[in-house]
Length: 544
Ligand code: PEP
Ligand code: MG
Image (cartoon, rainbow, N blue to C red):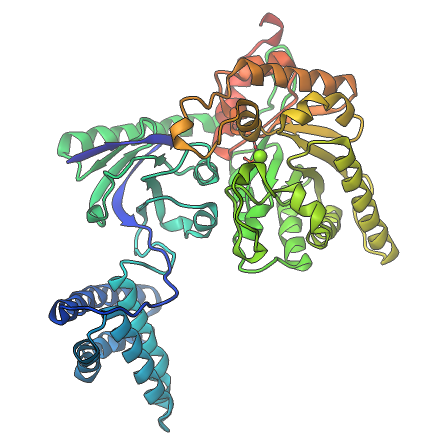
């Protein structure tokens, strides 16, 4: 048994096999090799693995879609074993003294061309298959995958690190837990794990080796411990811990349908943070009173190009409809910093967290902003949508945003397209500047939502992504608590409500403090809704 420790980002116990996350490799490099026989041996080993994969796929397909559809995987196995195909690869390696990946890629291309040129329709169709098996071989040779989890059953996904765009694209049904060598508990990958209720550990370090691929392991997200090939005693203990956790969560089910109200009668809005339509389902399952933060940028992260107005409209409308009249606060695009998207073509920056991100992009690339606002407004006709703007630092910015919003509204009115004329707008308070002018900002908008993740980062001058700084990253810092107090007072003095949508909102050590301050709303990962409701219902603010 190997025991590794990192930082737990979401409690829970998962038991399953480890599967290393494999990134897509789009180009095949050609390079010289001295030992051609060793290179050919690599191809043979890769072929063995590919055949195993195909046998598993055949069995799965046989069970799920029947013999006729499963046969293709048998055909692929036969093609891999084809002597002409194998000879061609070995020949290229020997005569050109090149690497296996190049020889396989070239053979795949040559054979595909040959098949494509045949008259017989059956052989023509084999062109795609020979490319497919060659890509499978190259992927195995590269020890890289198609950017997905290559497994038939749910696994513990291991990786050096996962960026948000990779995490959002994972097939969640196949993920029991995440474990990463690097990463920070404040990253968006960690946030996604919490939203999905998936035990996760980050910053395990180099001890997490690829040789553990496929080995049985236990993730204890409560303590941040990963046990690889656990012994009997640990396995038993962890099975019991998992069961206990499940039972605890079951007990919380009795909180469903109850009001989120303190013992002395104060009602708190308890909302969920989500990133897509599926998360809205999780929010409902946990009986969220609404959505307090829909990170709309996840929609952009999941796409390979700018999502169109209609595409966005459908997503926002679906979430609004599914939440059935409950409030849905959608935050406009917040990319940049750790959330990078290739097609935005953003320049590299020395200090991305202090750089071109969020509303700064929207106010310079207003075409993107207007498209999103149109989609949001159109969707507002189908539910109770509010719009929230991230990374605000000035009153001028808010006025500019409101100006653009009014223009977009006028366009829609002109075109006879319906939308909610009274749509609420709010801003994230996540920069010290916004805190210090919250009295002025409160006159401009309908609500505030404090983004404590960024507010902590910018107040303490600590990169939220840097694992080395985690012991200094302290959202309980008096500076942050005073800021929350100041923002709440300024909000209430101006008749607007204030919430917290950063991770701190779910921190039950501070729930009483927040209630005492007068915070009106807490928006948290769905899994924290019921425990928080219980806590709030047990609190008497008048006695604090
Ligand atoms: C925050 O900064 O606290 C927040 C909620 O936004 P994000 O984590 O997406 O930056
Ligand atoms: Mg933020």
